Length: 243
Ligand SMILES: NC(=O)c1ccc[n+]([C@@H]2O[C@H](COP(=O)([O-])OP(=O)(O)OC[C@H]3O[C@@H](n4cnc5c(N)ncnc54)[C@H](OP(=O)(O)O)[C@@H]3O)[C@@H](O)[C@H]2O)c1
Image 1 (spheres, rainbow, N blue to C red):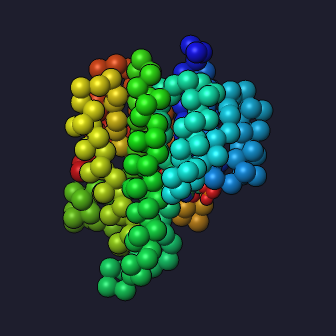
Image 2 (cartoon, rainbow, N blue to C red; image 1 turned 120 degrees about the horizontal axis):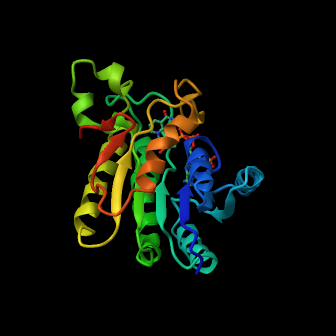
Image 3 (cartoon, rainbow, N blue to C red; image 1 turned 90 degrees about the vertical axis):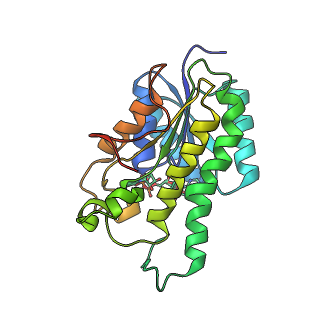
């Protein structure tokens, strides 16, 4: 088994996930580029390798049990363990998401990726994380999932528009993260949520104001936490995000 740290980043073919992979690679990690589309995955791996990153492709659709199981097998064979899992893949569900008119199918689709996908991938990777000396899990959340900010007087300015599929999916993810933190409290695993800020990516039609590199910073910090670091927390660049 290599001494090099091994990470898996889901949805790493573009946007914030790609920059998390690049950032961990720059720190000397070997990075599994989790991506569901072969062409996009191969292109990202090639670009990362050109930048000097020890990157390897991991076919991965977080909504598909067999794909996730195969990804765990691939990492077991490639590296024998996992030091950091970054659950970054996510979708908004698109379109208008007013509670009074939303199509329930949109909510199911968003939850399948943003919440159940994270649980599916995490559970498949736990045995590999258990073989690490300092395992870390980072769940890419969003401050739109903060109930405190949603209910504040300046709701829209701090958490974005009303979106009954996307925003609650991140609240759900935060709650799920706490359940894992409680179950894993007696293990070496540290598990936390990251908010990247409002980042210019495909997810929001590139309307965000931060670069994907800036958006990757908190997740990279949480993936590389020292032993004794926080677990069951929710962080952005400026510090703790209120639940
Ligand atoms: N951008 C922001 O302002 C912002 C703010 C807060 C939180 N976030 C969160 O940050 C994360 C990354 O978002 P981003 O802005 O970088 O968006 P993005 O550019 O749209 O990237 C999303 C990534 O997730 C992948 N993905 C989606 N569904 C998947 C599935 N079923 N299986 C595997 N991969 C899947 C996409 O792959 P394909 O290319 O195959 O679609 C893509 O690689 C998300 O969880 C998002 O909710 C973003």
